[in-house]
Image 1: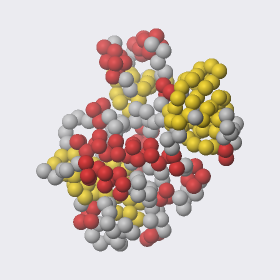
Image 2: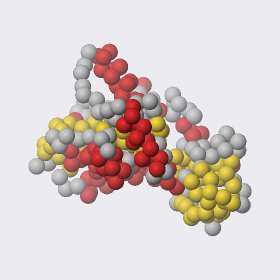
Image 3: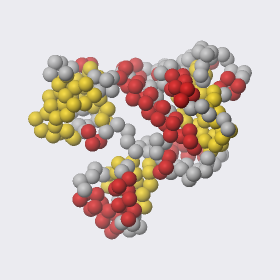
Image 4: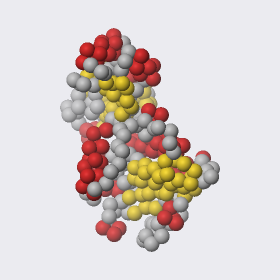
Length: 294
């Protein structure tokens, strides 16, 4: 088994010697000795002389040569607010007393989502809201809405945990723009060829499928969920949709009917519709129009 025995800080190890990537949640990034699995399925032993905090971009040096790159997993967060600065300080004390990692701001605290801690904080008078790690992107959405003269209710939430933000009313339409490898925009972002690794794909596919399964129950019968990605890889597109359709009897692929008048897809059997980079002077793109029967 491969063994990693030292940690080299981000920017101080030769990325050309990277053998694989290991994506770790926060609780797995403060370790001394543990068996771990890289994103490509390679098992290895982390064997350090003392417990060490592993940071995003660090390199784990392997005994046999080469490095494993550490990446911090995207994790659901909750935002903690209080009616007064004094109460917020009290809440921070309780979190610190439990040795929980937290980002403390003047008017709020961000912590990893944990239903036990959330219940405790609510009992102490906190206002707790689920947020997405990338909630700042909503500012761009609002800017686009303003520019187009449109209005919408924006909610920062984790698609994998709709119970934290959904009000229980089914949606007529859902647009699910999934995180992906972005291989369809390589002509505008050629660095993707250097940054992406084969081991990146499986975690992305797992997340895409999980997001689709989490949001499907929010769609009303007769509604449509539009799955989109800027990838051109079948594993992230038709592969995800085909597996979902096979496991979900009430789901149907309505893409062909919705794409009447479009140029034919390079993958006519589908499911979904793909455009390759450069076609009609567009980036690579995929979408599947999923209809809910019943």
